[in-house]
Image 1 (cartoon, rainbow, N blue to C red):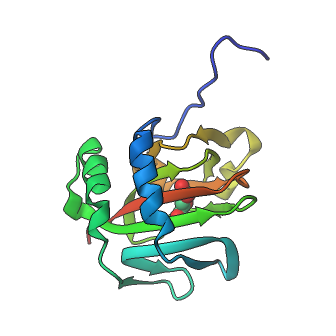
Image 2: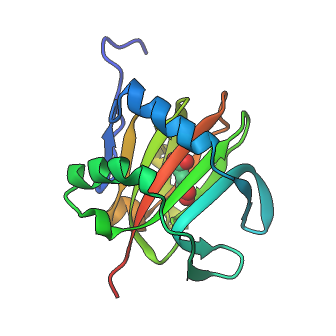
Image 3: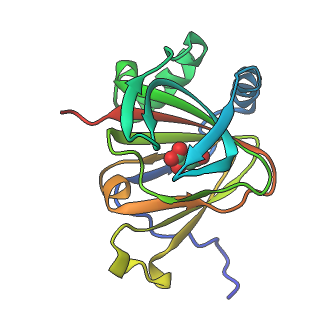
Length: 190
Ligand SMILES: O=C(O)CCC(=O)C(=O)O
């Protein structure tokens, strides 16, 4: 059906989306940093994924299901962290992990919920857009009509907390062009 306005899907509680969160200049600066960072193959659910990652701060191993403290988050990310945390009313010190992910054309991230020790997740998209999908975590609710597809634009930020974080899974469809994401995570309070 042709509609006058694009249909924005109803998003789960706790999923926030901010298009044009960063400027073109900020994106270029972040891409310079990201392209000079060493990325390594990602092992996810037992398989080497096509995408590559670099993790700073606390790192969750999907292989051993353990959390460990890795390299400090580089100071070059301070401005980004400040911008994100002031938007979502937390403090820079709340950010426990910064993960850079490179998605070569055709790569995906399969259905999952975020790693257990983390609480809030903020994802900034660089270089190209993607289709971000959400579906309920509960198997019986995973009917076709419950799946949400959201076009996530480069330079945007999404945030997942509350229900979006705990009751929903997310995945990314194969990307057409190379995409980078920077995800910032807070830790659950114990
Ligand atoms: O690239 C993204 O925006 C999603 C990243 C993600 O889902 C993850 O690292 O678990």
